Every structure is written in C-alpha cells, then in structure tokens.
Image 1 (spheres, rainbow, N blue to C red):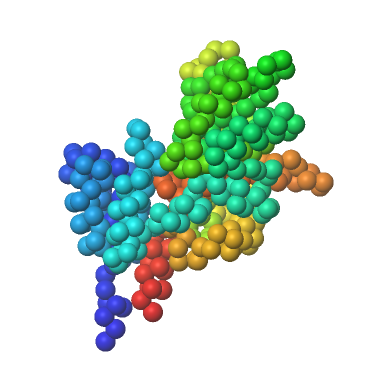
Image 2 (image 1 turned 135 degrees about the vertical axis):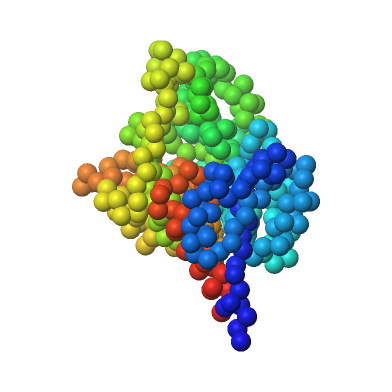
Length: 352
C-alpha cells in the first residue's frame, strides 16, 4: 500500500503578530481566510502560525509538525527584519517540511538585486549595482550627470522604504533633488554628498544598492503580474503616486493618494501579451539564470512592471521594477485556488 497517497497533507501559514494574535487567530478570522478555504477545498489541512521573535521557539515547534510552510512576512516591519525568521525557516526546511518561499529563493528572486542579475532579459533596463559605499560614491555621480533621473533601491525593503528618485540640479556644487517612495514624502534639495551619506546604511542588511533609469511613463500606472509557480494567477493595475511629486495641496491630500489596485483574472484580455511573455519567456529565462527549479518557485509571487517606451509599432513595452516573493498580498480572487493547486501539486509531485 502506498501510504503517501492516503496521507492528508497539512500546512501552516506564517505571518507576523503579537502573542494575542497568536492565541486568537483562526483560519476563519485570518486575513488569509480565502487561502485557508481554497486549501481546505483541495483537501489540505491548514493552520495559522503567528510569528514574532519573542516566541520563535514555539513557532519552530509548530512548523516541524506540518508538511509545508507558506510564509507571508515583509522584509522590514516596524524596524524588524526577517533575519531571525529566515534562520528559523532554513532550519525547519532542513528538517523536513517544505517552505515557500524558502529564504534562499527569496535571496535569488525577491530582492532588488534581481533587477541587475536579469537586466539582459526582455524586462531589463540600464541597471547597475553598487556593492560598497565607496563604489557608490565613485560611480553614481557620473551616471546621474550623464543619464538623466535615476531611481535607487536598497536591496531588501517594502512599502517604498529605501527607494529614491534622484535628479541632478544645475548647481556649481553637485546637488540633487530627491524624492523618497515612502508614502507622504516630499521632494528635498541637498548636496549630493549629503544624499550619498544618507544611503550608506543600505549597505548593511541587504548588502547593495540597485540603480535604474527613471521611467517617464510612471504616471500610466504599475502592472502587478501575480504568479503561482510558473503560471500567471492574475493581474493588478494601479495608478501609483510613489516617486511622483505631490500636488500643491500636499502629500496628505486626496490628490496625492494612490488609486485602488484594480484586480483582474489571468485571462484579462488587456494583459495577454504580458502573460505570454511571463509564462513563455521571462519566467523560464529567470529560472535558468538564477538556478531556480519549478518546485522551488513560490506558490505566490508577483512581478511589478512599469510601462517602458512604446516599440516601433506603438505597442507597450514593460520594465521590471520589483519582484515580491516575501509577502505577496492582497491577491486577485483567482489566486487562492491557484495557490492551493500549486501546494497540492508540490506534495503530490514530491510523493512520486
């Protein structure tokens, strides 16, 4: 008898919270309720696993009791990083349970460095990486002077933290106008050296700064392509306001707030060209370049695109600005079922 075929698989969904949340969160009151429902419909038992460093031992014990671990934790949250959690997840994965996304996979595809490593793919741009503060001080000023506005990104972050639009100002002493992507930010003028010093902490946890050209079609919005494994699970289109100077009314005015992210299923006709590129070209090319196999792709991740210059035929092109593999949420209505299929397929495939 094949005992694996009759095994009822179990997973834990990891998210951040305090001791009260760990005690009180259930599948029914969790923000991931639709994911819990989809997993249950696929015959997979799922339980919440609220994490904080103060009770990491209890979380580790819980995760070692399930077959799989699905993680939704931001890289930076209220000053806390994922350093301790990632160590815990590595240990759990080494002892048996499957972890999605595994910290090693996140370090390959879910950090800004992926923009540099995949710059030769069709989604790439004129992208550079600075590994040290010295290299940043030496190389960035010339690129800014010669190449127009640039966007700098710390390697690990979320919510616009550590992402800056930088314009050179025509001063005798090198000066810049900078705008942080963090909501509520306003442009600041300062000496270039002052700004370079402000960025030096980004060479700590995360290790590098990524430099891309500013995309002039930013006001046309951002397209978020949601993926489950190697298949598109849906799209989101949002008129973002990050890196766009706020109106005279100020950064807190209604006019300065981003529009809602309009969700679409994977078959939305306006995004089929992007879907064909993601499924047929860019994702397989990324996997080969980064040495990620299909079983290691996260059960949910997304690629954020800005519109690039139109091609010779007037068609849209797309420039990758970020991949989210740590905490991809909210998600389209079709995505929970796609997640459940990916989880089920991972377990069934591993048991063969």
